Image (cartoon, rainbow, N blue to C red; front, side, top):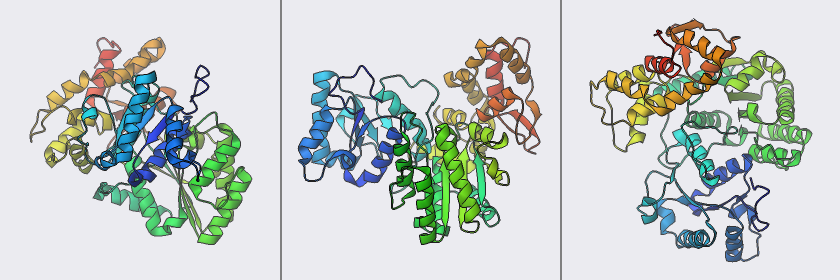
Length: 476
């Protein structure tokens, strides 16, 4: 994302230093940055075989405006990574070159400079999206704020040693999805904001590889970079699909996918972020999916994940009209097992009993960010005071931020005050024609009632906070 004001010598937005053991993880990070419009120096992408390794790396470092140092205990023991850190420090002294430490793995390395700077925590795959957003903000030298705003979907990094395995509730949901594929070619999986789907998608891919074989499973994340040309766009997709040819057109990509299908016997495709890509690319991909559906009925399976924009594309027809017979599913709500896992991630070795976990789910309404706020607030003893958690949520800055955008539109503010006056806001239907209710649902402020028939506010603390922020006098 080099700007017009940059010097002629600055070729790259970011230089990534890493140890080879994390090569695949780093390549996914670099690809996500590239898909978001950043020009990345990664050794395996930029260095020419036969040329000087040292000279090539130093030149790339000099021509970058920021450095990302992927830090693990093993990486710091690598003399080469340490040397690149010192080179980055020299750049920092000369021209204000920012160094952004990225911590990967399961331990925070005991490195002195990590004690003096803010680092980006990628240790939990559950919060990969939030960590990636903080990295983007660091590269652009801007404060992240209370909300996560990504330009599109992200590729999933590979699981590192010791990553969590799916708990029983997740396994049950995953098996339910794959049972659908015995009779359905396509499934649409919708999720509300802040649901944290990276871990579940990893489990879905692992389950698909078990059933279809690793060679027959593709995770497709169409680039959201608005500056990419068509040739580059389809080349990225071809790389993700692992087809033999580097496709540069939708026709060629379809041909290569059909050749892959014929050679391997079957194809399972998980698609993320279709709604975020450019219009022409989205229509072309829809055509490819349609052709594969029609020509390879028994050997092709498609799972598309997304949120509000994907639901619009599906329920209002158009580009996804060919999926009219697809089965629609939603991400499951958080469970006690999720609370226990999030508790352990918050602090290594920390545990929580089921009674307290149930109380936390009730107070937070199962909203991941509200739950995370409660977990980070202090000790969680059995019988902890739910009223104290609720009071803490009422004053949380990011909770207020959820409602402040409505203060700039008097009509929407008044309507929202009316909705906030009651826990029940209306009937739950597959597609909400009411624009405000639809927006509140996909922002994860509303959820289905236990019987699935009504829409209710996710929790009482959220409703009360909204009344207070919007100044809804005499309500609630």
